[in-house]
Amino acid sequence: MALSNKVIGAINFVAMLLSIPIIGAGIWLTTEPDNSCVKILQWPVIILGILILVVALAGFVGGFWRIQWLLVVYLIAMLILIILLACLVVFIYMVTLRGSGHLEPNRTYLEYHLDDYSGWLRRRVRSSYKWDRIRNCLSSTSMCAELNQRYRMAQDFFNAHISPLQSGCCKPPTECGYTFVNPTYWISPINTAADMDCLQWSNEQTQLCYSCDSCKAGLLANLKKEWRRADIILLITLVALICVYVIGCCAFRNAKTEDLFNRYKHGYS
Image (cartoon, rainbow, N blue to C red; front, side, top):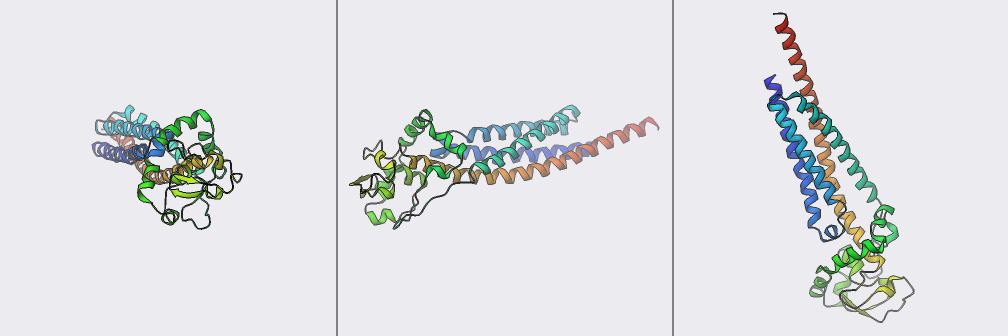
């Protein structure tokens, strides 16, 4: 029985370690400017990782100190958390399934359209109340100012690989036909009727295209890229957790069987 308990404790110690990449993925998301402004995914991920850590710690304690009821609580709670993690992995995949950038003539960077993205993501940025808060947060970053320092000539900027957020928020849509002065200052649009965003553009450095649908689309494109990376980490951790849980269940069952055998043996000896 002692050996089985130590095995269960060791298995739960591995489960504790597996909570680290989940918590790390959530913390990484908080360090990204777009996610720190939107604040949708990072806290559910961090909280789920912490819960897995706490439950695995309970299983570790229950395994080494032979606390049977704590092991039962661990098995039930960990199963629930694994199901929640699986739901989160599937949810992230589904909401980031749609949406991609569009090529424009003589441009290396891509343009982004809000309607390309899932309805759930669009609802996160459509309301003026939510977007005002996000816009103020984005405009306080240096992402657009960095473009002015990096690109002086028009052709250099047109050939640049800028982020979706910079493409959507820091410049007007290409189809409007604005003339480049610098990455955040454009004049003389050719076709202001091409898109409503053409009228939203402002050379005021605190405004730019932060009120444009292209900025919202660029934000969602950035979120999609980062959420997909986090989802890969969560998926790998989920598979590892399932393996650890199955092994733990088998070890717990073997320990119970061994305990019953020992009781039977001592009862008839």
